[in-house]
Length: 227
Length: 227
Image (tube, rainbow over all chains, first blue to last red; front, side, top):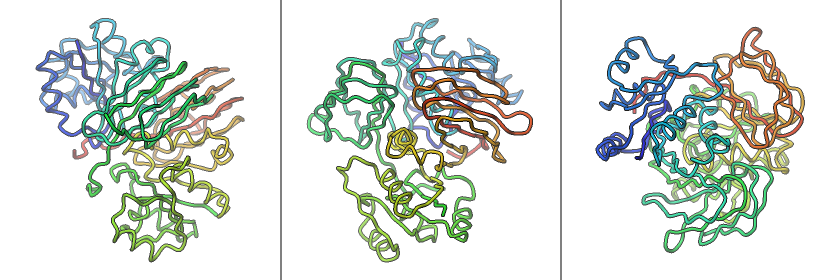
């Protein structure tokens, strides 16, 4: 079973047609998850999450009443916990619901310490095994995570660029088939190799021996947006 | 001399009253810098950068003509370069203009590989010496960077939370005076310790022996923003 989770990031960063896509996922029996404020945001879109995780302290009492009435599985977290609500949600979704793929929405913009947690949690031993089963999608980006090995990255329709972000020390990183290739690259600290592009076949090969790598496909959007 | 640089990130992530603040900085003789599309965004706000850096390939010809006419120092980058436009700008600003502090605006949102470059460039040996002289400000966040040592972090008015992001391996990290403290923490990979808070005196002490640490002060904003 696949899952879609909406986090509390700002609506301005939501991907286009998000509501439509969540409805379609729900139709295909994907598990729908709200993380903290994401639960009420889903309700506002007319979508009832199957699972909600959070301390819900940013919700008003009547908002909490609404979601408690309709959501079949509510999991309450405590603020002094070691794990964030999103990290707790990963555990529930992959362990209890045995999902095999998770799309994170509302995971960008907003508070940057939250966003950095969403990126860097893939490095933690307790979540790392799920890293390749998680994607983050927002208005301009598709982020996927890779553990050591040989990976073929396929250009997703609509995206123009890709960047490689090594989230930790990386050994023997190779990029082949791209506009800018790389051979046997080593770095002891994280680095973002941005603004690369797909060329023929829309396929790129990325391999490395150690570390975790995020591949970010991205696109430009209409620059004349309103402030 | 201080400097303010506007990058090409989306307007939706700009801090409140940004235009006013840039005008005030200009009055105090701060150096005003446009990075690539940020140059034309400044012009649209009625502000002429003192320095513009970029390949400017996202600008239309008439836009480029406008900024070439008014900006006294235009530096053209080549796309196949090793450094990003923002990294090049750091070199020009700190080396050629001898600035002693830099505020980055428009550095968040948008393409996430760009944002990650803006965070992770502080780790590179050629920029690391300037890390403590750079801040990133957007709608909800103030990000400052620290090299090893003992640092007193002061709560900036209007911000509620703070998070510590270790951008690389960190040794002997201590957090004192905060809601959640930490003692002799070690981690071999980056981690985001989010949602901490200032308590009395609005001061927190952060010390560590190795690595680079980002301290992100953040706040919630009106959640009923328009999509």
